[in-house]
View 1: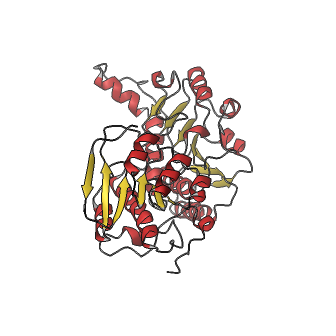
View 2 (view 1 turned 90 degrees about the vertical axis):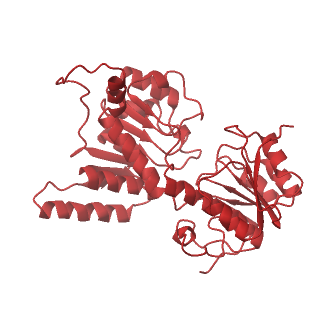
View 3 (view 1 turned 30 degrees about the horizontal axis):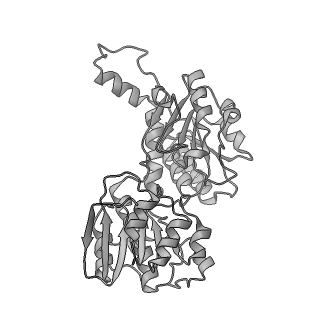
Length: 386
């Protein structure tokens, strides 16, 4: 059995044993656990992704809760091991929990936490960054300069796309999709077309109000439209950002046929989930359409890319860093720790996992609640009335 050799321990005489499978940003999350009599063990093993065997060794014979990562396979084996060790709490340091078998967690009575409510603006900002980088060919130009190839200004050198007056398309206008849309509409005066199963009323009101502001100041007003189909967005938008959830209905949502519907010089951004895009089809489309550009933060088979993607100049690829701002990552660590602590202490579940500001206020103690437990209803956990 593999066993991590490097462990950092805080408050060794603590009553409750909480394990973190990775070092996490900041120290507030550690302090909050220690203040509630927890012994905190942090695995510092130099492995990017821990195996199931590694984590079982970490759990050991007695463990009250675990803070884990999206890259880990939390299924029958791990929940069984955690339950045998007396543990009743696990939290991903992530919003998503595609790596977690919720049915197995329910079987062993383990509460599963996640960390929504703290990634919205940060993720939207990265999507906007990729949009600009792709539109203005910034990565290509940077590599060109570093290679010493620049010998003077030329009229056609790295000509890209102007965003102002173009149409931004958003697939999935939830919190992150709407935040991204607002950035692109207000920041670059882009028109909006979006597709979502539910009407994004607040987003529509925002764009309408901004259009009125522009018109009152003698400028061309922006417009918005809710598309009746996703294909309508793909056909009309110049820049498209994907923000759906990942389930059976959204797997390979963007495939060969749908890529063919997009404009030849369109830009596609994905900061949602890798399998939403058929990556093999995308590589072929990028090869055949050199003016089509893409910005990817997530990949179908992370941490790997499909063959050929890395060599394409019209693809910008970054390693799943949408949430990688200091404030957000420290907030995620805090929320994950408080999810585990709340279950250990018998606290209720917070009434709304997307309204977590009170947990993030460093100048006040957090509420006595678990910020977000995804299987709270299945386990019959009480909900806070605060």
